[in-house]
Image 1 (cartoon, rainbow, N blue to C red):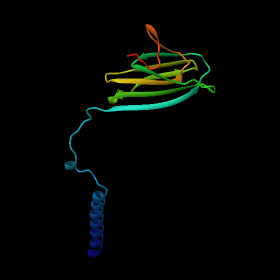
Image 2 (cartoon, rainbow, N blue to C red):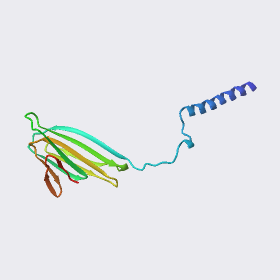
Image 3 (cartoon, rainbow, N blue to C red):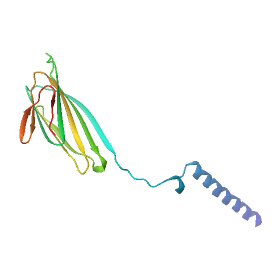
Image 4 (cartoon, one colour):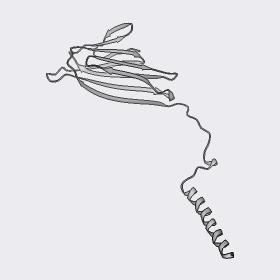
Length: 152
């Protein structure tokens, strides 16, 4: 009987010591290893670039909310005409982003709304020099010159 208790005690001791050793080996966080903390501020940015073949003689860009538009012109070519859209979205905190966009070959529509924290969208459009770009931002319509056409 004494032998049985020695075996059971030995197995229990090995399990206890082995379990504690494995726990420390797996880097278990102990209370003294951490401190109170909280996130104060974070900013997120997302950039997407898309290129489209265009056949229309002019482009229209309708924006709402926190959207800026920049137009860059390139020399007109005899081949396929192309529009490149670089979209950069930024937002702060946990509010996320409320963004919508649509493109139908002639109209680009974009909207960016912010919650409590700041956010914004910058669209950089690269177009052939012979393609006028019209910026529609209620209550006005602007022709974008070859440099910068901003709504904000």
